[in-house]
Image (cartoon, rainbow, N blue to C red; front, side):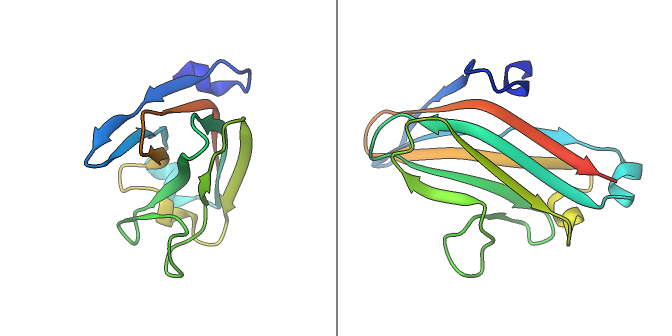
Length: 138
């Protein structure tokens, strides 16, 4: 999605669907790198700018950890912190994350690095993602 390449207020909006008693909106931007890049990988970094509608909306950014085969966020002490869940982030907010200790943990065997931008609420909402940048240093 080229619209996410520039932080210019031209957002990709995802409308929530009902999931049980909650409404959930999620987008999963990703990037793919080659096997050679993965073998030389020194650092993975992600920058995100966006928000969600609704003052009671819970927003979470998570990165897939292929080493642990689980979504990582900061729900409990065993999970790595990315961002959230934050309540009521209705104005654009920038978030940056990087890992230079074990960057290959976040890259699949096929070279994919995947981010989840997710919002949940008790009424209809939208995620509004303005900017996502993946940086891989090798």
